[in-house]
Amino acid sequence: MMRRTVLLAFLASQAAARLAPQPSAARTVALRADGSNFKRAAVARGGASAKSSVPASTLNLAKNIVGSGVLALPAGVAAYSSARGASAPACLLIALLGAVSAYCFALVGRACAATGTSTYRGAWEKTVGPGTGGLITGICSFKTLVGCVSYCIIIGDTGTALAKKLGAPALLARRDVLLSTVGAAVLFPLSMLRDLKSLAPTSMLGLAGMLYTALVVVLRGLDGSYAGDGKLLAALVAEGKPTPSFGTGSSPGGALLLVSMLATSFIAHYNAANFYVELENPTLARYGTVAGLGFSIAVAFFCAVATFGHRTFGSAAQGFILNSFADADALANVAKSLVGVAVAFTYPLLFKGARDGLFELLGSSDDDKENMRTPVTAALVAVTVLAGVTIRDLGFVVARVSSASFVSFARSAGRARSFTPVCS
Image (cartoon, helix red, strand yellow):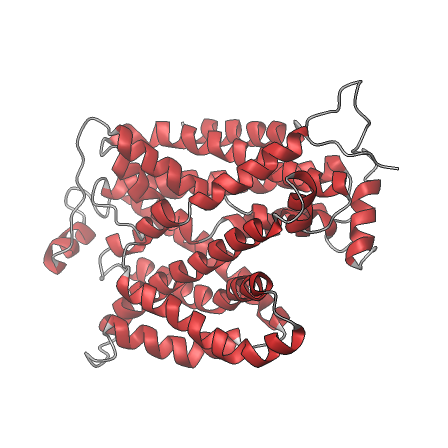
């Protein structure tokens, strides 16, 4: 079933990414298949030369999509239904929303090409109206800040679990102490770096960590370690953790919660302009291929984690799926370590977007940015750390806090669909 769902997702994402609206005979053709508008936008941004091939862009897009949200999906399926077969309709929903998201992502890029702009804000102002760019800047900044909060939650969960496992002093194993220490000693210094290019390789570590985690989730769903007489099920009981539980029926409200999680998890649209500007030989067909393949990979990732995470734990699946595994599960502990380290070094990449967006909203000059850089960085890191200490449910953040940003991305994509400016 899952193989067929993934194949359907691939075909749907490919079709969605290529189903760009064509101007009617009464309109002036705005988009050129040879990519001339893409190249003009790249020149306007200061780089006429190509930078990234289709395979490289596809992997980067998949890496952008597959973030902390995927680790909350088994809990989203459990909210919909605790029945063992609930993952099948959930995967169909994942495939559907993946195709819609791929379509919207492709439209945002096409809007940039049609308007000759090279930024999301530029395309928004050309399609929605001058003077409205602050709205999309604010939403993108909010999205990246919430991403930082999600990372702090993961660091808190993985850090405290590993500290207890390693026998660290009780004080250091406390969530507030550990997160505050990591925030001051790691997150703040990294966020103060002026050149974040040195951190780029760590994003590949993040993808590797997510891939390893997905493989662990799939393996545990297949090997029966948490079912019947499985030794890890006995470990859960001994540790006093919730044990796998399954039932019947479904909840419409839970289905909406899953939709909200997916709407957030699939968001990479704030980077659509970067992907088309940096694409090698940027044509509409090549850009559509990147969008279709990137979202297809993400759909496969999401289906695997959602299916086997729910199949293993049912209604006991927690908002951060690795918390559902037994402390005695060595493979899961390695996954926690990889994910925790990866998000710590990926944090400043998201943080920069939040800080720069705040400066843009405030209309800060270059001198103001320099003078305010340290106190603003310290304040924002403190806010995310405090949120990570207070909020312990990753699923809550993914489902309820940041899904509103999807509405704005869909809104701008809808505007892009009907907008066909005159190009000389």
